[in-house]
Image (cartoon, rainbow, N blue to C red):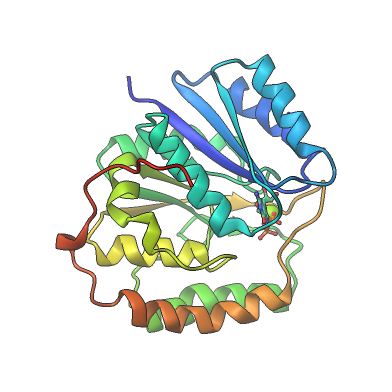
Length: 255
Ligand SMILES: Nc1nc2c(ncn2[C@@H]2O[C@H](COP(=O)(O)OP(=O)(O)O)[C@@H](O)[C@H]2O)c(=O)[nH]1
Ligand SMILES: [Mg+2]
């Protein structure tokens, strides 16, 4: 029975974390574990995570990092730890309920069917975003995902910026996480692009993406602007990758 580890980055999610953990374990999925990666949240999320880890012994792990360093580095550290801990499948998931736990079984079923990575996609047919999204936000997201990213990177993916995904262990090893440069939002795009260039099989399943109701988003306009330039840089950096350049050895040193 393969095990799945959910890597969940948190920054000031004190209200959400206990609730999302409960919702996840209510699903009663065999071999499911959670690794919380907290960047020393001022609101005490890290201590809450430790309490939960004691309560759900062997099912919840916590990685404490020194300070807020962005989503990318938090995920890279979490992925490496999940690999070291022996996870077969590794999932990425936010703590704020925009990524709804009810889709977890479907993501696991899809990866088991043989894909190398599966994206829970807001823009696949049948998916959607919160009704309250204004025209500007919708347009920006549509432009980024359906026009900009596909045309610059040639990615045949509808939601390359989404952060709700599952990876096969060997896919994450194959990417070579030390190749990844991006920090914020665009980190998701870079991982997808590297996976695509290396020839990994990617699938999307449709999801509905509600806005968070508790806590605050850490996304801002500066991060979004920066993303546009980073997409050009990542094309330059990774465009020559081929399946022969997949990494084969697991990560040893913890960073
Ligand atoms: N560890 C860590 N987690 C972060 C950081 N920035 C955001 N997060 C977490 O990443 C997830 C997504 O962030 P969020 O602010 O909801 O972004 P949005 O969904 O794009 O608005 C949430 O679980 C956040 O708590 C960070 O710098 N470090
Ligand atoms: Mg969010």
